[in-house]
Length: 123
Image 1 (cartoon, rainbow, N blue to C red):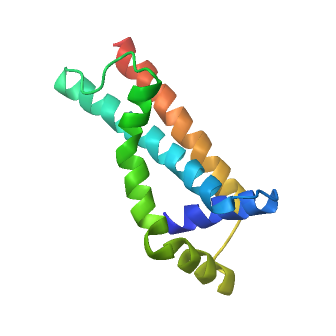
Image 2 (image 1 turned 135 degrees about the horizontal axis):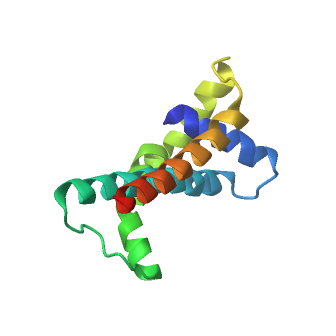
């Protein structure tokens, strides 16, 4: 997660975003929410009952995203942990191809969600 956070941060910072920390937080939260929603779909299919309503309005989407947003806040922003992550990766040579990692994680998460939804509700 730390590596992914730093990859998103490097891309967003390179685009001269005025709020790179918040934008990184939003991007990583979107990826995590897609993964969370995929897991919910699989659990719903296994249990045979709905965990989340099928027609969420905007308020319902925000409420269902709250656990992901709160978790990401504590992982990255509580006690300014994002600065520690950024400083660790800036000092080391651990970073390889941050653009591919960040964009790839978004694409894979979206495709996984789409494929899971299509497969689970086809049968």
